[in-house]
Length: 477
Image 1 (cartoon, one colour):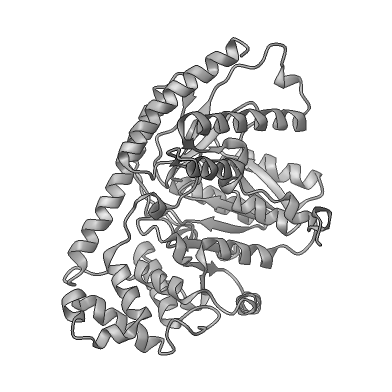
Image 2 (cartoon, one colour):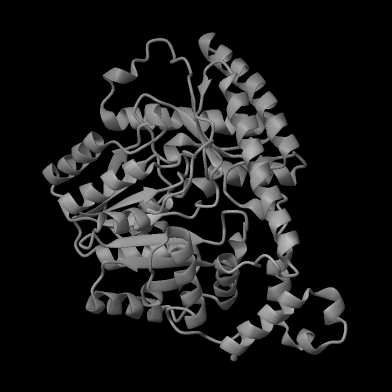
């Protein structure tokens, strides 16, 4: 029998906070009859977001082609959905149950390239696009290619989405932290990037890449074009590849803000030497198709011989799942004005995005009214990274603690807070230590995906809980 001592030590070091111990406890409480508001993970359809009608209609027809010839189909399905399903089956005649090209179906990669061209006003190469099982697999593929030696490292934002820290731990690579600037809407700070890479060099780390999440997870921030340009110049200066996690590009709510891709800014700067990996997914945006595990990876500034190694890596896994590839296609090629499905599609899309924007406001403004809580109203994505203040036990001076001891002390505090919040209110959020945070600060990440009435209730419950919890700590209870 395999014992815990036999388990891969790299796996033991990996942590994935958004499905950690607090979530396990939430499931236990739910089975006991307690209502739980799950705000721990960006899983829209698990939180009552309905799937888009057109997408599911096309998938139904493609998965069961006999429907295309059934007499009832013309009454049940709009003509453009039937036409789209027939086209997909013509382009991929082996159907959804067969392997595809390792890089993904050629017509879908072409559609992704055209989507990028429409979005950014510049050319994109279908032969540098790989279809992946969600963005996560794309990130893991890029890291597999880049990480060559035990002292290789990747710069990741703090706070970060724990896919990055967990994957680096699994691969035995070095995590090079850089802190996002909470006081400046969570943007990247050039002086902080320089501090981070220089500290890594002094510790013998060979930094090979920098990861950037835009719009931000867990911060909800949207980066400016100027900030993106700074990152590209920094990467060129230090010979780094860029991993641009852009899965929330449709989720922008801030007044006057818009999503700008790293690829677009790199094109405008005429940058030819920095390798760029850009990731997108069907799990976020307004689709919320997490379970279909679809997405793409676009690569720029990579030689043919290196790209051949990426194709080889894809072929080891055979291909991404066919349904995910098709959902990716429908994401980048939605119904157009004049199509029978367009009006409903536009209505459903608008309703989802408008609702997310409204809930971001409700959450952000409501939490900021609670004494001892501070958060930027989310400008994008699906999350808020909320800072909260707690009094220290008498006689405790965190500033006098060694760095490792202080991290453990603060992680214990935010974990205990979030667990108690769950037990008392049913609100399930993730401790900030699971994403990383500046020493001396406490945070939690919450989504604003639950229905609007649950978000309103969350704010009220949070206020009562936080005031009570802080008061008990002050009195030494």
